[in-house]
Length: 182
Image 1 (cartoon, rainbow, N blue to C red):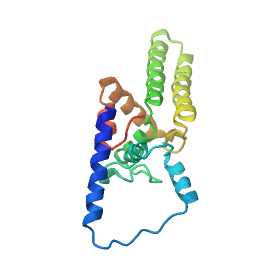
Image 2 (image 1 turned 90 degrees about the horizontal axis):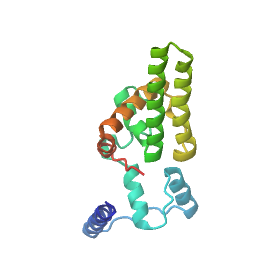
Image 3 (image 1 turned 45 degrees about the vertical axis):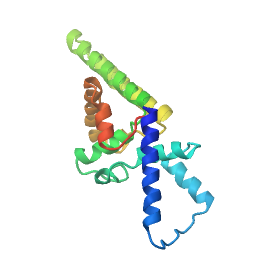
Image 4 (image 1 turned 90 degrees about the vertical axis):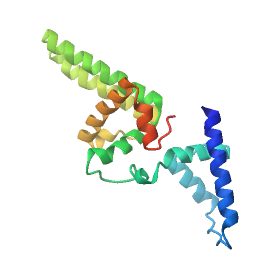
């Protein structure tokens, strides 16, 4: 897997070299100061040391052109437009696993509440579902949960992600939008 990623990076590097040679007197790009570059990399989440690791991380951040700015918007009109943003906010496997555990536990508690008539379990189900998810966001993913800004879309997307994980299609969904699972 890692070897395939390295080969893809090498291919892209050779393509850019050949493009650069074919251009006639290309204007040099304005240089950014190193402080600005570091700030820009921090904002994008690039913390890798080697160039190959940095290029892999850049690939993870910029998916195919049709979805390129999907997670950089401030407002999402539809659930279809929100989904790539939601996946980007859940790029770490351990965070997705915590979401899956919390949602599954919530389902079990809801079933128990209905079966036994102990409706206090519904409240516990709600708390447990969000507790696992928010722990994953604050301590693993280190981002703000989408629930705060988009509560309904986030709730629906959480179950969509749960189903994709249950059926084994989550990697296909991530790949579709150019998001590399970390």
